[in-house]
Image (tube, rainbow, N blue to C red; front, side, top):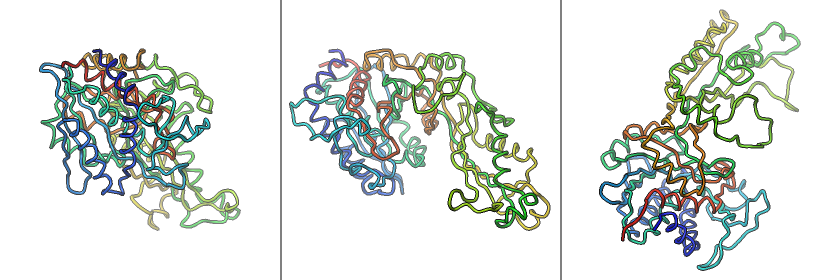
Length: 476
């Protein structure tokens, strides 16, 4: 039987049971500050696969939540794919949620569209694919786990064409600090023709997409110093250095009006891939997001270049709290999105050189009295390197069967995205020596990392079909 037909037949007969199982998983809190429930989550996943006669186990490093790993054996000589997802989720503030975040709630549509509360269906009752489940981790990132479990059920004991090895971790939302060590420990069991990272959303048009890379990440905090304490602006406005003005000018010197970097050496090492550039040109833009888009560059093409983003500024007070002062300091918090080939520490050093080239004296902490007496422009630049970006060429032949599986599951041509604009520590998986791709499942409007996170059921069904397509044809 065709694997997607098999999955769809199984879904049609077992929709209520799939949702009930997913509801059980989502009911377990999964934030990093709750290691006991992370352990419960890992054990639930392991035991759910074991109930399906799948070889699954947990492995735990000291001070870290366990990973769940296992294998679904296929025919000898068949393809072998690795599947990664994470079972941990972002912190929650229950007061900001419309419903308790770990009491999964079924709605007839999105909250924004006026979705109404529903009871979870009983066996045989109809299920609308536009319904949504609201719970932390519903889309980011427990949906792929539920989808793989349902795809195994659809096999009904038969052996698939492909072998699937899987790895689910519990620390992605805090930067995956133990993932490299887990990969070293388990590397011998994780060999695959390709590793598929099941995280993130499908395209804003609701079309399925395959992403071939992610940008890397680094962060910088820049603090410009003025007088030792706030000074009266009338008396000292022309005399004391104003750090708010200086910081604004400094940040503006780092990028032009189109967002392109003007820091010498910022793009050093960036890999230019003509195939990815061509693929980016075919990706549709996301449509109306409530603001006027830039002119001359698509969102997909923009994700192939490095970015300096100002995520926060602080200097003095505003509104009713404002005071007529020259503030003592001004701080900019900056995130850097780096493309494949760039080294995060090298980019940080390029920015430090740029700042010095603008006439600033760099200090490691608060300036001393001698620093203030000798230098009018004083600045502290602290950087955290983060991790590099990764990009697999979109014409890599080893990923062609994966693209075909996505095409079969989606029932249409998927979007080929050369790189996500966001950052995931994908580089850790390069140690496994296999090409990498990202296979998102969640709806684009899922509110991940925010309150009222949700998953559209049509996206869960797509996930089941996708996992079945990857497993391939089954033999009795």
